[in-house]
Image 1 (tube, rainbow, N blue to C red):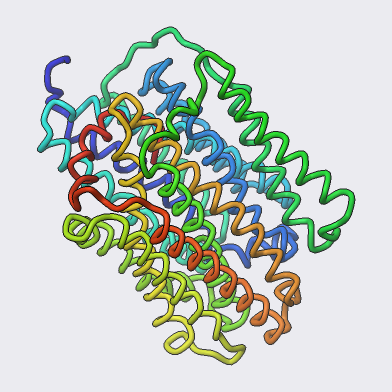
Image 2: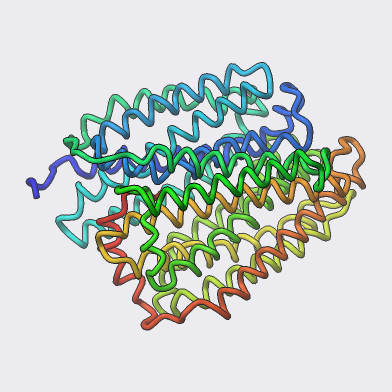
Length: 480
């Protein structure tokens, strides 16, 4: 191990800023969606691609980003990721058509998939010499995620209301340039020899994208139409091909033996269903506030701040303490059931509703459920893995959350559209569509909670995941 880096805390600021920006990129677009829809000609069903293009590229390429970071050097991949993110931001800001916007968002997702795992690798290099410093650094780095989500909601409203929606992407250019200038604070890492499973990464990303495309188009084309059936079959074939590749190549992105780790499968299933319920709620709640209640972009962003504030407080200050006392399983299962309750409450929204009655209390309940389940599920997925596979376990759980988010949003957009959410200006029809999406999101969360409580093995010791956190962190190179 090299000497302790005297500039490590300044370097942590750079890494935390990267985490902040990557997470903000998933939340800043929410309140801008209606304006983007008007300017770029998205249909109500196609609008989700502004979000899903980023999520598919980000989630599908996280494992590849971690592998490239290992082979080519973390700082080099970190810098490359920022260059790619800046390029995607320029394309997204300058877009005049819907398809160009989607391409820009996908390029941003590729940049995020390079930044996130390389940032974690660099953090480990800087602080692994001292477990106490590592714990403090991980806490600060982890706090950047909910802070980024909160800031994205607020800044998206500010930029859209008083400037224009392209500014939600333009902001990444000066920040990205400043970050690149500050990377001299980060440790240089040499490259090493090894293979890159590009074919596996391409198969899983293409399979996910094709599945989302088929689900989005199904309400219009028909679920039993030849096109939909062939697209879903093609998506399934690509995902099967990914697992075949992982079994046969010498250096796979995801060695299949990892799934023998205790509780890894159940924790990843919980994360998949958590993403499939939470992200559609956030998406449709933005649309309800603006398209039904008539909120402007800033007011809509401000209306979501109580929810994101509660998330930040619980995730950074409360959930870990609860986990040490009661263990992960009750928090994951219970959190998903609380999320389901909040979503079911949200399904009672009215065309003539109000924020104080129809949105605020239900959204706070949903946010409480999310904040209880997310960190325990993440820690559980990593805690059972041996040190040399901890980074892989982290990458998988981050990927399954993103996959659940994309597929859940696609499926629930199809549900909402079929129930009237495509009829802009028709407030009762829009509300019926959004309500149906909330109901089915509640079902997804409830199923996840019940499966967790019934299937997941209990904690051998309530504090076990925390005890394993440090070694897991030292190997974590493919997660957010």
